[in-house]
Length: 439
Image (cartoon, rainbow, N blue to C red; front, side, top):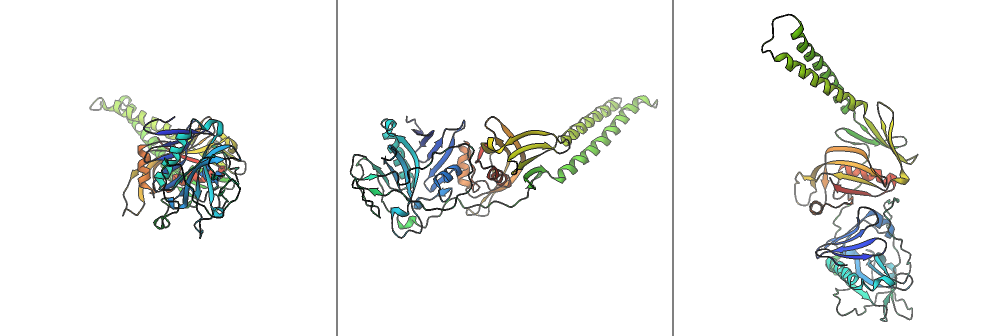
């Protein structure tokens, strides 16, 4: 169950907890490619949009100051063990459980927990130690218990296509710590924990309260978004990717240039051997002219082929479908309904840093990107974008991702570029998550 150097604890609903002394991740294995739902670092949590919506969290990032404690306890309502967090409301004037939000991370049915109890405890302790938060294990045989939960119907996390629009900030009741007499106090009462478990102070320290979230909020840029060869803009039925006018102008210029050079060199090459005039010196020069003429003819054919096969991609929010259609030859190359799309994928080269004015400023970055939609069986290319420039507000985190190039949810604070902005806008219209991976 535990594998070194990364410890792994299996939980219900296709979830694994993976942790090291410096990292902690909650990973969904429901899809073919494992997906990180929650990633913890000493400065806070980064949460996948699907998990944010399922747990109705206030944002995709949580600082340690927002977490009251980590709890592993028995839920008599569902007869399962649950690992989760008590979240604080910043407006609270006292630590009242009625104003706290419960966020479940993983659960184990009673019949499967016996073999994983130690691993689950260690996983909970590891998360608490990483965030410097208190950890509480509540044994069902002891008098004080943690009820999971007054609203115990938190949904299972599913990575299938769902609407993951940004949730509004809400306050939810979390189950209080209660006794067997069903007396629910309005404030948390400290209870003794199992001796061998490491604990931390149960109330946030003053220095924790002003801690800022590591990831700043990045707003979506308005359309249109323009690239070197593409434009992403609104249409009457949705949004469209299409070639910019400069792309057409460059290719028309190439057609004229290659056509003129082809005719010129072919005339010179053929005419030198058929004109009846004196032989050209050196004698191999006409042959070179013919070869250059053939080369120009090939370039002309390739350019014409590229122009006749130019396509646009429309995200049609009226018909609820994405399709690729020719711009010169009006044939539909592929079409995928929204209901079949599972996620949007941004495949990219490793971002190259372009410098910044100071350590507090975002890092300027540059990369090549390819945007796809995945329908459960194959990927469909939407746009290939070269030399995309943008900013990273969390460059240190991006450098860690480069060293560990797993597919992960898109965070605009990491990749604030027009390409990633466009991918997120597509996903928001379809209602699916966005992932990033290195090509």
